[in-house]
Length: 89
Image 1: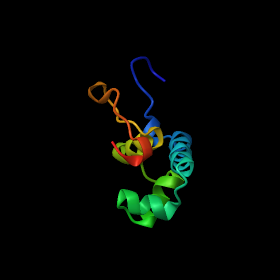
Image 2: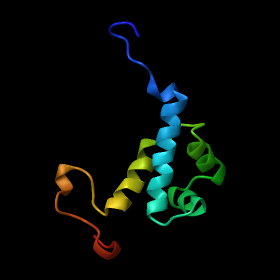
Image 3: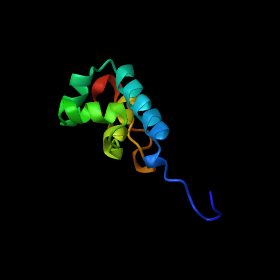
């Protein structure tokens, strides 16, 4: 690596595989199947397969939504103290 240059991790297959594994673990921790997630995110099963395999980048919004569901709280300082007990705000 030359000084001042950054490695593009989005093109690194190992990095993409790592992100895909975290994504799958996130929805598995919610008890969701791949079919459930594709319906929740309104994508085709093929798109979800491509994300899970690391073939395509997972959109930040998809990953973030699953993280919000796992933590049952909203991100950002303006939502501090708000959460989803029993699935309700």
